[in-house]
Amino acid sequence: MTSVYFDHAATTPVDPRVLEQMLPFFCERYGNPSEVHRLGRDARTAVERARAQVAAGLGAGEKEIVFTAGGTEADNLALIGYLQRFEPGHFIISAIEHPAVMEAARALNRLGWAVDFIPVDGDGVIDVDAYEQAFRDDTKLASVMYANNVVGTIQPIAELARVAHEKGAAFHTDAVQGVGSVPIDVGALGVDMLTLSGHKLYGPKGIGALYVKRGTRLTPLIHGGGHERRLRSGTENVPGIVGLGAAVDLAQAQLAETRPRLEALRDRLARGVLESVPDVKYLGHPTERLPGNVAFTVRYIEGESMLLQLDAHGFMVSSGSACASGSLEPSHVILALGLGAEEAHGSLRLTLGRENTREEADAFIEVFPPIVDKLRQMSPLYVKG
Amino acid sequence: MYTDLVMDHFSNPRNVGEIEDADGVGQIGNPVCGDVMRISIDVDDDRIADVKFKTFGCGAAVATSSMVTEMVKGKTLAEAAEISNRAVADALGGLPPNKMHCSNLAADALHLAIQDYLVKAGREADVPQILKALPKDHAHSSH
Ligand SMILES: Cc1ncc(COP(=O)(O)O)c(C=O)c1O
Ligand code: FES
Image (tube, each protein chain N blue to C red):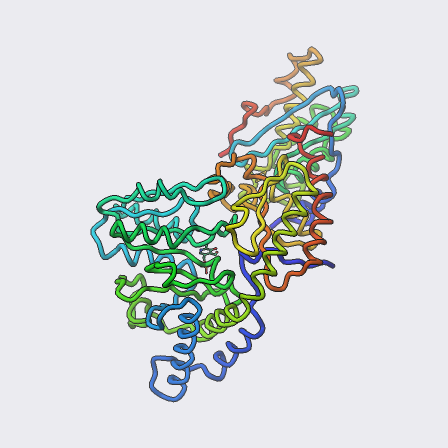
């Protein structure tokens, strides 16, 4: 039976080479990095080595990396940890942020912070003018994601960070979808904080990091023994941290090869779908997008039913349809692109990864049109017989 | 998340389509998630002689539509009118909780088709008696 995984934006498999480096830290090298004995020192060395690997992957300094329990926590630490130091004022995020940023922003809003959600254009690119005009005297922070998890659009981060600094605000970017897929250098971007997550780059789940530029002061969200330079207490997840370091290292080493290969695969898949199915709209920016992201919406039919049919044929994909979400709300990202609720219903996202092949892309293009046909025949909205 | 029976009805839906010049047609849409179901019936001797559906919606929406068509074929109008959304969901072995409102309107669409038939057949007077539980309005707002 076919088994093709096209959902790498949701999560990636752990690379066996990453797992291999993690394994000793469960049963043999299990020391607590805070202890001074041999096993403790061994674990500390491993954690600091991983920190150096992550720092190198971002062009950052080792002291600028804080390990967290994933991307969500790093986003929360960036927004809440940064703003908590001030009296409530104003901050800015984009309208298409991941819930990790969106909900942290709403929590701050409930604490008295004013927040502006900057709209995006039809391709998912932030409205730079609206962004620039949103800054106020009391704007302390702007946070705009590096690349969108639904439609893959990459934002002009360096420009956005420069504007924020001109206006006297700090700048954070959620780069969970970018790190490991495209080259990222915090110096070139000029950001103050940047989020990454292990399980989007062939590392384990439940581990991530926040880059915090030297001199950027944060208040911890999690209080305790003062780990991670007081920013994130709790005994370090040593196997996870080792895995994250190894995963960043591996992604760096492979980027020059995987990026162009995935871009070619992405464009082949997109072309194949658009040519073989009528009434399909490609979503996101045509070129400024993640190497592995193919997103589109199919008129007259609904995403969850496409997703289930594809699953029955062995293809694992994702949809922004209301019906496919637990909340039964359409994806706020798709709506932000200016699509109506009905179009959002038909959205589908294929996200490619290292192990995907041309044969798999071609197999999808074979299987997909008859599925669309079958569902359209069933749809009361589809008028053509 | 879906039972095997839901998946079976979703993958091999029964009675898909539209009856030409149907005796009765019922359509219902759900404002919460936006699904649309249309059921058409032919009535013979007060029994549902034929029934077909078209549905825009998720797996559960398709499965409940398919299931209701199976349940009512050959039934009298009064028997068909007794079938509730809940009974359709039960016949499928249950639905995920969040889908109980949204996708579970197939019986309502059927009832509207029966009403449409009765009205067209000049039997408006029979509507209250046969359709005791008519959906309040065609837009049916759940929650
Ligand atoms: C853009 C973005 N930010 C944040 C997250 C959350 O990361 P994590 O799953 O590690 O908490 C994700 C992944 O779901 C994401 O895609
Ligand atoms: S049709 Fe939307 S959840 Fe079922």
